[in-house]
Length: 276
Length: 270
Image 1: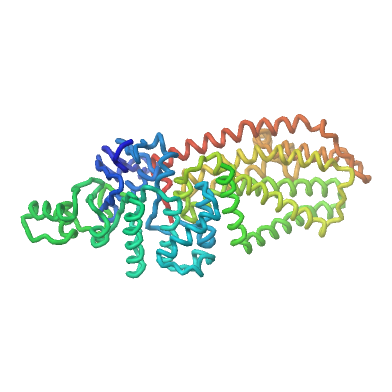
Image 2: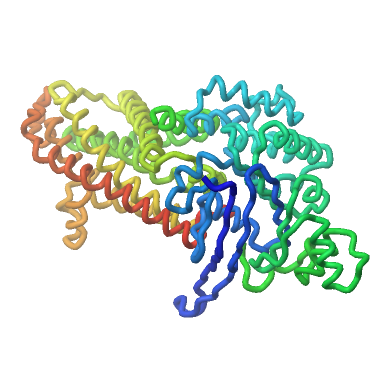
């Protein structure tokens, strides 16, 4: 088996949209263009990029939800899409959007996941409560419908859902976006603790530079579906400083601007040729 | 595998429980609309018509719920935003959709029994002499075909996030129109009648009317329900439709899922 938890080789994805009279015109929008990178087993790798840069599309490819047009991806040595059922057993995913049955309680949502993954419900319930306690979730709210919970509480349920199956690989798609500072800190501490205890491999997409620097050993910068730079935070700043001619570049945000040619956040319009 | 399948039953049961007020509204609506249809027969002082309409509303309340629950399961997941998570769980589509179908079947039985019990409040009904066991076999045989149709219709929301649920409803209304639920298929315009031949509800109704003794009803109680052997052709057709439609449903579903993954249609919308 490969020592890489994730291997992405020349992955490209283009979305086509028909417009015009009776769909006579087709607009092609690139989500990913020849993306290559790997994540070592047990490593935390961060993907940085503005909205529409292709981060979520890449996570979807790795989650078996999107088939690339070109290239291939391997998870724990298993090729996609051929071995997608096996891949699904080793990944947990947390996405930025609220993807739960909102009328169901936290317990009901989590026990549904446990059953679908073939776990013993009694064991899964104990595990869920333990994870939620570590995340600082009030145990009295376990039976409340998710629609009655704050965004922070909902996101803690989403993280618990991903961890319930004890996956060796976690795909975290902006897991702390929209959280208050305390919830954000709780989540980050939990992820650090998880890595210490279980050596879980993590692929994190984020806009938050502090979060990326704190949690990730290496970072990749995505812009317009292309991976424009890769390395540790210090390496990226150094390369950016050399390219930009300003040795004083000290933040990842400045480094991103220098390397990708655009701002990392507050991108008003979706970049041309991008939908994801 | 059984635990995974029951996981979907667990989810759907709790969703029903949490949406209980809507479930109550739809169930009472089904009862009231069934009563209004069957009372047409009472108003006409025509027992045979009343029985025909009663069989129609009972069968349709069972088959339509079965079809609708399966067909709308994907649309519901789109609305909730959970579709991606269900599709990335390590569960085969066979187990997933059989789990959904199992709950749909239980729910459809409950709804049909509720409507039947409620109709006794509105109507002076007697099924004495009807072959009710035979009717249960017909319902069971027609369930497979309707599960297959539900699976095919469930692909529509996979393919089109916006229009899929609408198309599913149109599909269901066409089934209602062409299957002769409340009238003989022969009264349909000639150009529509071929569609009746491919609807499993047509054969389920034909067999049920025979087993109830509606076709031979002379105006005198008790009913003289046909023997089971008299409806073997209909049962055979229904089972054959099930044998064709269930695998076809899974095949179509698989193809649509692969297409949705290629085109990015699984992505949450709304």
